Length: 428
Image 1 (cartoon, one colour):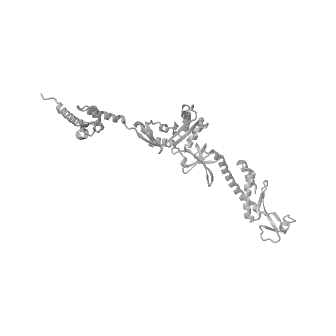
Image 2 (cartoon, one colour):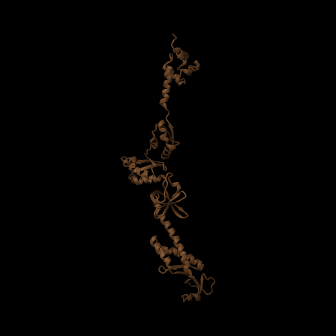
Image 3 (cartoon, helix red, strand yellow):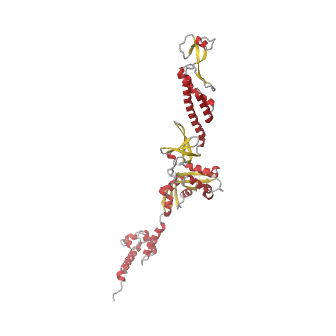
């Protein structure tokens, strides 16, 4: 092994932090493989490397024989004694040097290849060992290049991948830009461990809150649920184990500073923080904020809830393209149906007006007018085609049916008589 190889060993030992003994062991394995090809299937072949001079020697254990049948396993008595074993006799086992001529050059080539491969493998193992316990943490990296829609980031000692599926659709990155990501997982590929990052995962928002909110770190506040549409909106349900600590207020921070820092990191993504409740009605009502809801009908068996909102609150409850309702459903784990509240006031006003119109007819009482409206007769004209039998079917009208119809006909006659022609002044 030449001086260049020794210098390379020293360099890797110093820069990569790998001991010289380990590097020599890797080189020795490669040279042994090369020696087996150069020497042949020699019995118990081994190689030695002088760590100072770099000299390589190959040794094999051979059996002394009077007649050589296999040169790879046997040695003659004469050759054994010439090799320094003066008292060798048939049947003895001796270890002799079998280094081929010119083997140093071949061994050096194999050593370089082995060293490069070993360093690459050691670096990958080092990366895995360094990051395997940091999954779920936030790391910072510099955008180095793009591979199709994936982004490759430089973390300092290693590279990481921000796949397209983990990118926020509203964000664009520039080469040289420094960004923060969630270390989502480490995947083992044919090229070694691959660090996978994410900015779209809800856990990224959760990690940002943990870095800002001390109460989340110490366990005073717990995030019970989180739902996110990356780049647009996130909802968090928080709960406090200490009755004296307001979970929403702690996450928002003084003058909203804590949540402002997170929203800034998320490029102005909207973040809703709501108090968690074991009462599903209260929880759903808060999850649909900022909309106000009127009532909830719960179907426990199907884990479904019907929410009624005032007419003007329906757009807020549903949200743009259904986003608010969709996130509320994910947050609570319940399927949410939203319906507008019927315009009861307007309906009652129309009924009251119809009752007053019929009760104004001489011969029809207010109670009878209300019964007629409930039967579907909302005006005098509606009763024109009705018969005595039609009205008498209702026991509350009964014998008064004919009287009512006579009153209606009389009212129509009066209306016709008081028309425009009748009201015109007589000619002088």
